[in-house]
Image (cartoon, rainbow, N blue to C red; front, side, top):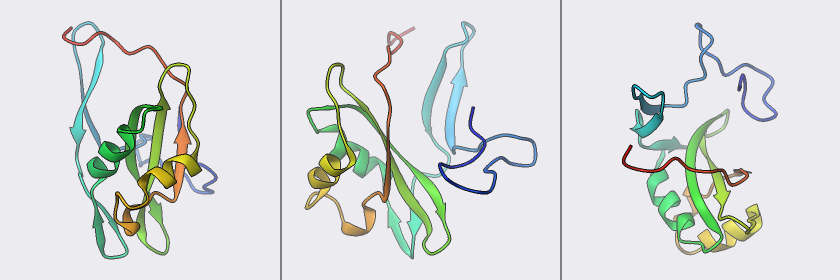
Length: 129
């Protein structure tokens, strides 16, 4: 799975070998995993508080974006920086420059993600199970 942040030299695993994403989740009797929130909802970057949900909401309005998530990445200078993870809609593609242009003027400058990661579209489980 994951043992470090992209291009990081040190491990991001805790003492027990887990990668702490900060996500809150549950697993039902059928083995379905449901992400239901975050243990820490804000990212503190250089003394400013960044709301990931705000960025996710803005990016999620882009017509090519299917799903968007913003997570915190440790940063030596700022403490934390936001990282944008995007799954494009089926048959469409997105790139970092396109999304940054879309965010410009809609999100505070300090909240701009400095890194992004694209995911291939995947089949989502049916809701309500």
